Image 1 (cartoon, one colour):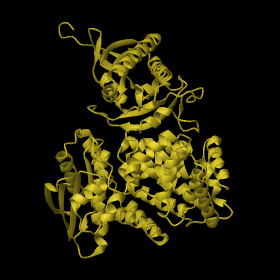
Image 2 (image 1 turned 90 degrees about the vertical axis):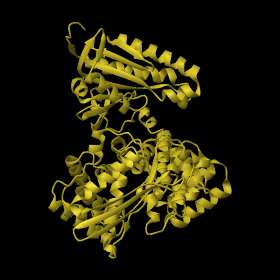
Image 3 (image 1 turned 60 degrees about the vertical axis):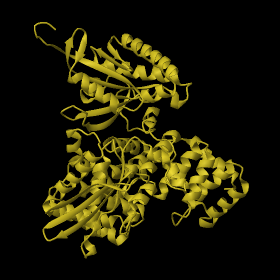
Image 4 (image 1 turned 30 degrees about the vertical axis):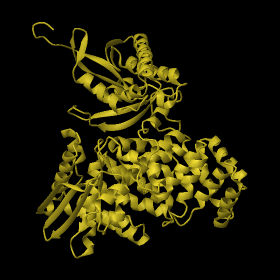
Length: 614
């Protein structure tokens, strides 16, 4: 670059990097290196065939540029298909998979190298792609729309590391069935790319082990590289128990804020609720929940002031790491929570950017009264009572009157309608489900990252048997909040019905890692996924433990009978089948298996049921 002059140009940038390269190298350095060499050759060939240019290689990463955005995306798709075809004979845990990001933007040119934000965005998009997947920016989407026969998932606006402004991100589907003759959104009932299921495969069996074991948490959880923390229910120090909702809300908000940090493993609120109102031994809590750090706190409200005391302890040693008291006017409750969250994160040395902090700590209302009404509504909704459901509905409506732009209140109101369908409290289920759908959409218009609203929308799609759309919403949720147990559970449920048991098992086990005490229905779906994978022993183990956790175990006995029959455990199968007959002699509930996307999965279940005499 001569005389200080800077040469700039617009170009399409492709950035590819190996997923999990360090792990694979540690397991088998020679084999991994040979795979990498082959992979880089395939990428180079594809780039040349797409009229592109490899700018440089950096270890296991490749940077290339194209004069055509369409050519860049077509090349990315051909690369992933070629790599998958090449590695199809290898065990899944031994495959070398690349992530790819494609961006179109301005770059600085210097001695045949390119630099600048255009390259940086492509690299950050690559990080958002699943192994074997592709992510593109909205600028790329605009240029390829209607020109390439692939499907896309809109992941919404994403904040990318060291990029000042959010970027709208799309995931490209590279499977053979992903197109429709024109570019389309991936909301049809076609199967999604198998690579999307691989994205959840960080932990394979930890969650199940945590639940099935009887002698304490799985030691592999303790060995995780992420700092792990449990936030115990905060104590209400007021004499009036009607203020319980406030202390619970403060603790839950801290859990939600912490859960959004990708480098922190946070135990879900369901799993810590058993400690409410109890004097606890922090070391015991640490062992029972499999976490290192435990946060305790209490809340005292006096007039217009609120006092919060918090204490962070290393549960493995019992050492107090940090304690603080906050005494402020109630209007500053959000600042108090934000300060606590930030202090904990700094204490645990979690690396976060200022942009991530702003995203995580953002609140969707500044109206304290609306916030309190919403907290009260959420507390009533959790009791799953018809009367209290309608009381909660009125509270959410009052919150919306106070703040018509309060997304969380709209989501809460939508959940009240969803619950009336779930529990049979309405004579107009279709109308109620439509209300739930419309309110979730209203909330998402106001706040696209509102977790409660996206959970609601995913649940509506699941109830309507649109499991493809439920899967898309669950993946959006995971992108927003990677540590949320319910998001991974919803992903696993959708994958179960879509006939993708490998991905379903990984997602459901990961959900149980974050919340070992999830609702019984999650374990049932895990049992079904194991069954579809012909892991009958695992299926039976999960279902046996799940029986008794709920009032009606019809579905557990049903699949358990089929699993026993497939293992040729005839007496056990007969006992389970008899339990089915005693609960429902007419088998009227068998219609549930009609949710399977593939007739082969229905037949696999039916085969076991026939063997069991059902």
